[in-house]
Amino acid sequence: MSEPDSDKVDLRSEIPRFRPAAPPPSFGEFVENMRRLQDLAVCVDATDEVYQQARDRAAELVELLAPYAAREGKGPANRSMDLPGRGSLLMPPFHVEKFDEESVVARGVLRRYHLGGGGVAHGGVLPLIFDDNFGNVVYAAKRPISRTAYLHVNYRKVTPLDVPLIIEGKVDRVEGRKTFITARLTEEDGTLLADGEGLMVQLLPGQP
Ligand SMILES: CCCCCCCCCCCCCC(=O)SCCNC(=O)CCNC(=O)[C@H](O)C(C)(C)COP(=O)(O)OP(=O)(O)OC[C@H]1O[C@@H](n2cnc3c(N)ncnc32)[C@H](O)[C@@H]1OP(=O)(O)O
Image (cartoon, rainbow, N blue to C red; front, side):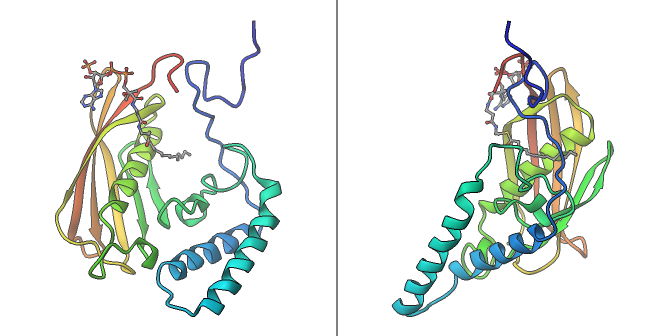
């Protein structure tokens, strides 16, 4: 019989255990510089000479970092709870401010990197924010490990960039393996930008 893998969340699931990271001191600034770089990469209008230099410096950075690529759950990205977006470049830079069984609240801004068109956020970024909130709600409500079965977002108003945003999500109801979650994305003054509803389904033994 094979040994249980202590990195798995439990024997029912292939999902790695979530362990918060204690990142090295420079990691947060590294991530913020990378975010700034992403903002610039999608907005600069430069000469070919500038792009050549940028290409070469990016290649140097790749060469520096490539030897340290690690498996999921090992590096600090996505697990650094004190950093915006848990230190993951995939995640918009939101900070969780409330995390309990009643609700999960996170606050952050969308930046130039998240631009869709007409000066406002890309619509596809919002489901990412909602999905992450739903995942947090499941954890905070101490529901079993689950995956998103569906996610519905109602876009009520365009979502501005560089303006503080707040998402609050909570469990609406539980039906057996199913956790239904609702959430609202607002500006600080309460202006509703989008609301969403999702179904998180508890995984069965062996489900990835
Ligand atoms: C300190 C801690 C901090 C934590 C921070 C970390 C946060 C990280 C956050 C990251 C978060 C990221 C999170 C992510 O992004 S998770 C990634 C995105 N999601 C997926 O990839 C999921 C892919 N799908 C599946 O794996 C399966 O389909 C699942 C597991 C969902 C269900 O397949 P399974 O074969 O197991 O179940 P079933 O089909 O018998 O269905 C079971 C029940 O559910 C009902 N049903 C199913 N689908 C739908 C549907 N679409 N609409 C309505 N109902 C639906 C179905 O009718 C049935 O109901 P009932 O007949 O029993 O009444």
